[in-house]
Image (cartoon, rainbow, N blue to C red; front, side, top):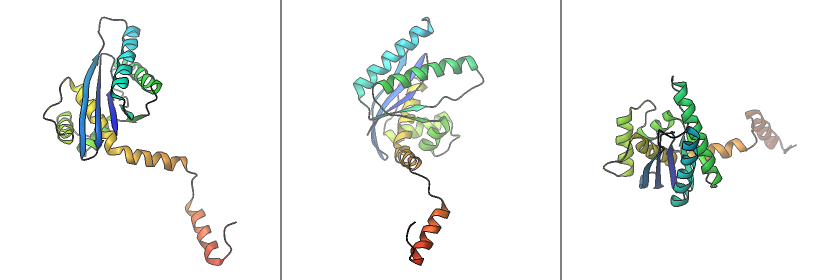
Length: 189
């Protein structure tokens, strides 16, 4: 399965295409999508939409894994990142690619085994899991790689949870009543 990992940002968005299965992952593509700081935000968002659309068309991922926004104390930065994230989600969805979202702690836990792991530890584990000596570009690219790896490790669980959520709930009482009826020969009513 080919997963496009996306680390959203207005100025820099990291993207990485990772293919394979846990234990046999291959980094196919990684890049930082940059938008010039001197441009109007609306123009930057439009440019970002075009850039991610081109990456999706070129890489043809089965799905995309996008980092959920972590709200920091800087509200202005958080708003700009959330706008960029919205544009990225919209463009990916417009291409018909299913999107899965992970918090930074979920990514760290899936990659490094510890939700509070530091960046250097996550980077080392990501490189080890992808069997690469280095990941070029800024931190955003390495983060996108980690997000894609996270989805590979969590995909089965995520799909199972989604299927379970779609099923009608059966309580323990319903199970006990059905078992009692079966034992007594009354059958289901």
